[in-house]
Amino acid sequence: MTNLSHLELENIRHLIGSHQTASEKLCSYAEQCTDPQIKQMFHQSSQDATNTTQKLISFLG
Image 1 (cartoon, rainbow, N blue to C red):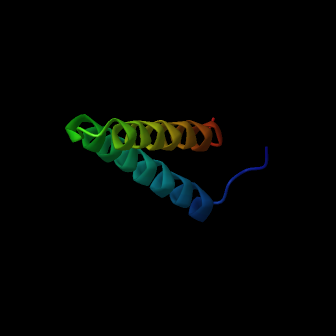
Image 2 (image 1 turned 180 degrees about the vertical axis):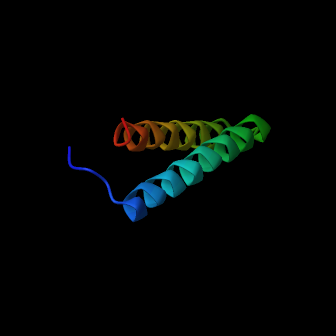
Image 3 (image 1 turned 120 degrees about the horizontal axis):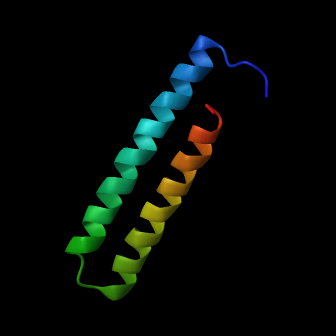
């Protein structure tokens, strides 16, 4: 892996924070849902955001 510039590092950190926030909100929306299909959609989207967060974190390691 090549070294990341300061700007690239800050951009990745920003993306990580955005995806973490999205994941938490989507999970909260899922918990409030009564429709099973929409509930599943929110849970899946939350998991996708979490997976993306983990991939972005791997760039920092």
